[in-house]
Length: 290
Image 1 (cartoon, one colour):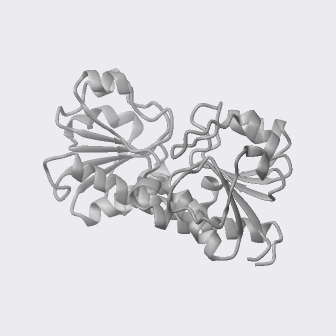
Image 2 (spheres, helix red, strand yellow):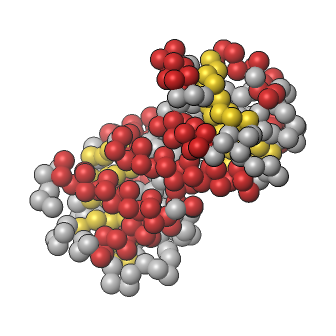
């Protein structure tokens, strides 16, 4: 990989591990907005965002931004406004994550080449594995009962929902899955889970010991939260805005467990390996000889 320059801007522990992998593979690595003692001393630790200006590939954090104002830098006090980033990334290809319509519009307005790596099935499916395992870990840590023989509801049957339901069932949980489409409901039934159409959700909510949400849409309003079992553990896996009225849930005494960016928390090395495979895929698609 000699001669291929990659900059990492922001991010959590998985990006520290990614920097280590890239360095070991012979990439020319620069970092900014990422601080950790495990970062190799030999890589370029930028003093300003402007130092990445000529880097052909930039990897941004997951999520890229939480407020549409600055780049997400949870491991460093450095503030990187989106405008600063766009000025530095003018000539780069940016690998972003969880890019909402506002961010996509900003990238396009600044004429910056970009992709959302979480839309690549090859990456998102693999990334769902540490997410599901982390969700199960959080469930165990926040309850006094076993997952075995518990009643679990998975909201959503996308990539993460599919893998999570499979792993919960393997642990002996009684798994129900909510979905909108009749096709998904048919698959849910075929896999041995109980299918719950969205329109019928209210009839079942009082049954569950655990609710795992994977849908980034506020589905659970106060009237639905009122139907929860008082002992339920709700685990939020979806990106902002999440699936529940958090203030009302906490007011009702519901055990609400936020679980964002689980791969970077529970399995940063595995998550970094996935990011590395993503970078290789992008490089090949861009015509790089690797």
